[in-house]
Image 1: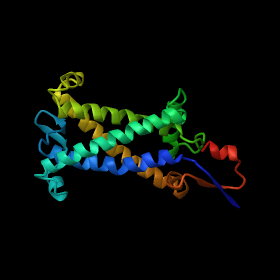
Image 2 (image 1 turned 135 degrees about the horizontal axis):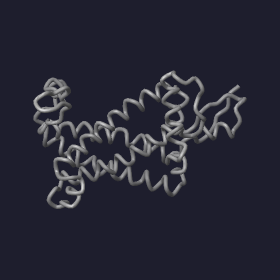
Image 3 (image 1 turned 90 degrees about the horizontal axis):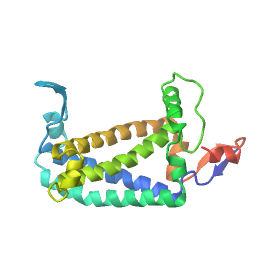
Length: 228
């Protein structure tokens, strides 16, 4: 027999989560339109290139060439939505006390390593079950820090003369642009890992972020469920 367990994730957290997903996708998409106009980043040394971000075939396949003005317009509009959603999310977590579940503690990094070993199949014993494990705490907190970094570096390269002190704080225009790009690649990596983990965790975990509750086996106590 099964029972319904209410509110794994509060309604506000679910709203912020699902609003941020399309907003960030549009930010990445429009950012690529802007990046096309000055596509210089690569992995390599001297005249040797191991990996180029991105080959010409990439731009042609996604039809992003010659869309700089469109990309800038979309980027600057959705930037304000990204900032507003982020500010409200941080304010809610602070005022509601949800930050206690999200901010890493002294045990989080050791636990995160155990989570990685378990996910890779190297360690059979499951890590402690709670609302957010150590790996999730580190990842979700890192995304908030990355969001702040994206906004600040974005301002630095958008208005480098007006916000010269912010530009210089990041080591100049070129450095701020590189950090902004690296953070964007970090979001893409986070998306890939996050979606893979959601698929691996199954429908019950996904339902927790959609409907706010999970369905647990009858033999599990309420205290155990509240720690998931």
